[in-house]
Image 1 (cartoon, rainbow, N blue to C red):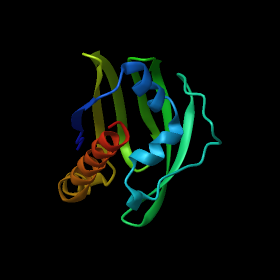
Image 2: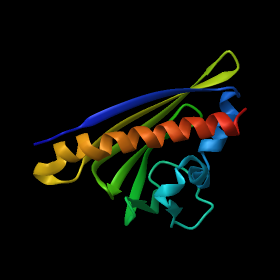
Image 3: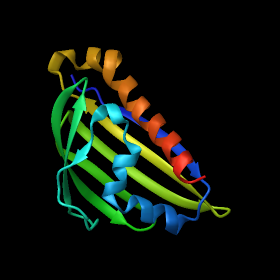
Length: 151
C-alpha cells in the first residue's frame, strides 16, 4: 500500500528575498532550524557549495534511534526555489520543495513536503501514530525559529 502525505507550510519572513535565500543557501543553517531532540548533524564537510546535483549527508535521531540521511539537491534556482530529495534515510520518499517570493519587501516562503513512511504494512499506522505529528512539529519549530532569527 502506498501512503504518500503532503504537508505545505507558508512562512512570511520580514526580510527581503535575497537575504532570506542567502540564509537558506548555507546548508549549515539547517542546524538552527532543526529541533534539538533530533540531534541533527551534517556529516558532509562544510561549507557546502549549494547547487543542483550536490549530495548532503546528515545524522539524525528519531525517538533516540540514530539514523543516517542522504539528500540530493535536485533543483537549484536562486533566489526563487530549490528542491531536496532523500536518497536514503528514514523515509521511503522525501521530496521537499522550497519556494521564495518577495511580497512588499518581505519574503513569502512556501515549503511543500511529500513523504512516505517506511514500515511496510505498518506504514499507515506509523503515519497516524507518529510520523505526521513529528513532521508537523519539525516545521512548526522551523517557523518559530525563523521568526526569532529574522525579527
